[in-house]
Image 1 (cartoon, rainbow, N blue to C red):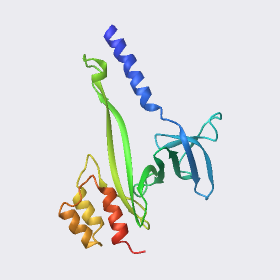
Image 2 (tube, rainbow, N blue to C red):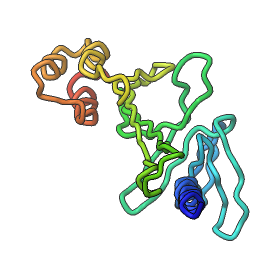
Image 3 (cartoon, rainbow, N blue to C red):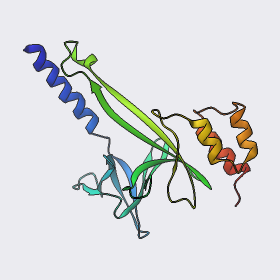
Image 4 (cartoon, one colour):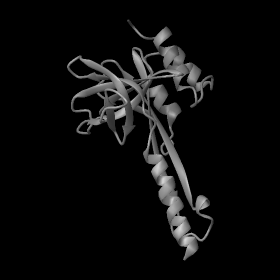
Amino acid sequence: MKKLSTFLLLSITLLSLDCFSQIDEAILFFKDGDSIQGYAELKENRIKFRASLDSESDIWTYKIIEKIEFEGVYGVKTFEYIPLQKGMKPVLLELVVEGEVSLYKQTVNWWTGDMTSQEFPLRALQKETSRDYYFKRKNDAYPYRVHSEIFNAWKKRTIEFFKDCPELVKRVRSHEFDDAEFRDIVYYYNDYCAEF
């Protein structure tokens, strides 16, 4: 009984830690063109925003928000609300590279484990992370999923997406780029292939 109560206490603590994000300086950009500075954190495709650290936070969503920029030690991180396909509600994607073709990343975290396990509680639960990458041309309505840790046909999908740039396709086929270099692939396309 003592093991079970310890396990439950540790499990709740671990799950709680994953639910709380750090509040960082941010700028909210509204669909009407206005913006506001304050402090924010992302929670399940929603934005918790407050004008000052002393004020109460409000929840903001894709209904009136276009994007959010976090200002941190390592520079600006931008997240945009983008629908992944027709009929879907927009989701927050991190903008990794911006240009004629932009690169976006979606990171999803979840906990797995056997709640009935007799093992030490910290080994029973594990945090899993999945990262999906998307290419999106400026005039495209929806992004093109190029890589998923579940579905990974990145080379075929990259070649299909960039078929208008034979030199880039050649470099992907010859293994000059690998699946960890989506940023470099997009930079290459924007620098040498994109029509401005």
